Image (cartoon, rainbow, N blue to C red; front, side, top):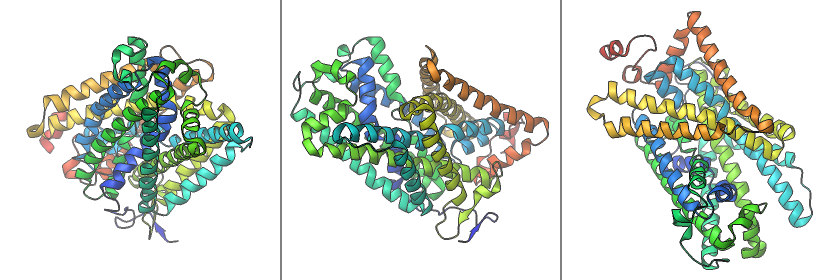
Length: 492
């Protein structure tokens, strides 16, 4: 196997490898429709009652505000660096590094926590249904190996898997929902789930919105695939819009259908059941209920592939820019995949899935990591909101819109801050109380690294990295992180 690190032609990914359908499914599978069906619907019902679609609809629209910044930024800058590239070139290298540092914790662990969680669900489900005990850690090992092989054999192959998996899990979820609407439980066919007045309480509905907001997180995973996408300045924005629209409609349908099938008058038992969607599927479909479990497994693998693709590209991009060790910028000579970055990501997946599962339990690692991810992703999203305002206010004044580039970023940032508040207060209990500390310490360490680089005169490394990641220095660099913005504008 021949691979290279140096040279503009050797450390490049395969341009135009994927088109809109592939990029779209990268975003959809990262969101994880079947995972949301099995667990998010129940979690929201626990606080919002029967008004699950209301909470999901509001949450989806709220994430649409966040998506505006991703769309606006991806129209002007496309690279494997994603948020790192955007923030480094627009706000400055210090902030860009902190954003990348946050990304390097919350995104790479996504595949591992899902594999561990899947292993636990498969073990308990098979044991309850068939009396067969299949250790969860075997699922985690097999899943990690599968993700590694798929990722190493090229983006086209991995995206092909993602497209097939995404279509399958959406089809199964919609079919189950339609079954529930045709054969409703106690309460019959009705539109109560779409009525805010039927929520358990106003506060419960708002908590449901908070839960639902990050159900839709993952659409931004298309950004690191920019270099390998055909016509990225058009493909990425379209993928963001279509992925959110598709998943919002999906969750509205499945939230309504599964509640109707269970019985809108029996929401209490729906919340109390260990896995109500699987229970409903067994009653409604008989032996074919296994298709729902398969769609869940399919969804977890799809999320894993999407995480592998996104994380490995950012790791590769940062290494190519010399922020991470250059060895991580190795590209396979024929497949044009970032080989070492993929292997590093797979190692992280293995450690998190197996090590985290044994340490915290398969459910515990999911909850613990979920708190960390929520805190760090808020930092990244808000940084993107600031970046979009600064980019259009300084460099693209003729396109600047007060609504699109100021009011929407402010609104989404305030919403994200509220989500962060509800995540931290009341403070998590037990072992989860350490999760916010881990996230905060991680950010502090990133800040210390930046401070050390600044005081040692090495800030130029970060500045060059941000410029190199943009791929178009003269058109992308807004601020070098040191000079006043007015001076930077005059220079451009």
